Image (cartoon, rainbow, N blue to C red; front, side, top):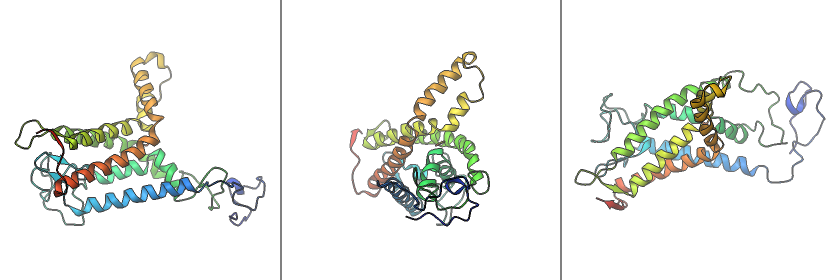
Length: 274
Ligand code: FES
């Protein structure tokens, strides 16, 4: 693969003082595999989540009060009866607006501006750069200092919204301990909803912004033992942020898919306590 044309005014590997190498990379391994898998994984999730967010079917199981996270909170009179845990804030919505529209843009923003996902799509989609020791095709590099990428700095605000959404998902998971004839009930759907919400909390709390909120700007950890302890716990989670980013994409899809199967009648929920 050849390097892009060198006009002598580039940055990075094309900066004036860098060695002139005609090849874009001298790597002979399959360096392109990881960016390719990343783009395939992210694309699969985006397509699935988009389709499911718009179809408006099989998102609520009235017998057991299972609600898929893609429709939570459901705040419109278009939502099926029982699925609006927080009331109806809006009237009927036209079909081109997803019923979970109140939080979906924030969740998308939270993921899109996440430090891990930035790395993933900068490498896989914008090739900036695609891998270590592989030159990027762009002649200039301005990083996140200009529009549109400077908008990435709003990530810390999305983090606060994500905390609220995690609380809402927790409420949904607790509400779902519901028996077919009322009272307490417990089935495989509860295990899936609960696992999803625990992992969503782990992903949210492992956020780099959370690490900054808990321990940032402190000059002396010894004077703030509680914040220091919280910061060390968040830091431990933070080392698994990439894993949690991918795992929660998987659990979101699994949770939605399971709710869809039960809600549509394709399968029956495996009940442990009815
Ligand atoms: Fe990934 Fe904040 S850095 S969610």
